[in-house]
Image 1 (tube, rainbow, N blue to C red):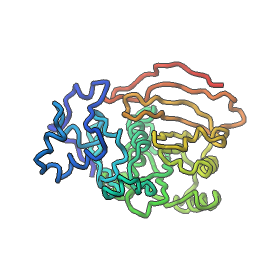
Image 2: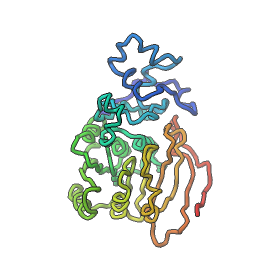
Image 3: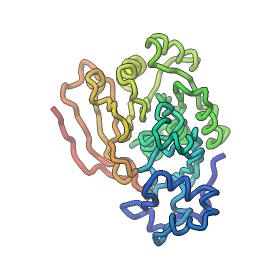
Image 4: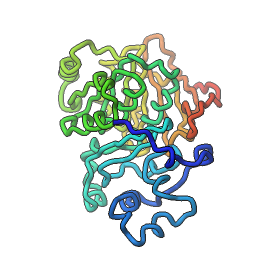
Length: 330
């Protein structure tokens, strides 16, 4: 159930209006220690965790617009991540936690779909701000979330009123279902569809066949969502070409940890036109751009037109206005 963030825990207004964010942690493990029951019972907790003036569990023990905890994503050891929206809603994002030794040795990276990654968090915050669309314009629009992971991105799209299909190779783990049921009102669950598909292990025609069977209807999508799912760029490019139309809006948030940036792939650049690049300024603390792409057509100019502008809203929820003009890249 969606929980309203208690008013008595809400941050002071000046925290939301500051251009920067509170820096609660110096390392990823602090979240586990300071916000866990074990940490709360520790006699050194106050000195270790809240030695800086003004910091507290209420301000630091969540992914929130007023702190920069997203700098340390993914939090491998956390079973649940409290996430505060600008509206005041509190979401609980469940993960598949790893033990401390595995996370320190990087042994969990092969199971990436069990965690909220930086790109997914970026996309969630962008969708929270309507991804530069008019609020309310998502009602009834069809979204396809490729590489849904824990389902956080699709969850945000559903909260905005969209019809969302969440596709992931590890959907059978149940994390997507758990997160949707834990955070969505019952009346929105009917607009979600979960499909287990691995587009890297079969032909495109077979993938489309399975996706159509899961959907039970045509594959006509208004939006494709991609975040931290570019581990096989050639297969992903072929799938996107097969699914998208010239009118389909493709939203991408790659995150800083992604070594397979699609714009570096020749096949991807030839098939898609970069319509605009949003600068992620004050939307999150993650230093990576947000992209909107469209299918390239015969009428598409060889020049790529890029709009450099801020994302839709800042930490206080206010709308940004474009701050830079068009930059034509040859």
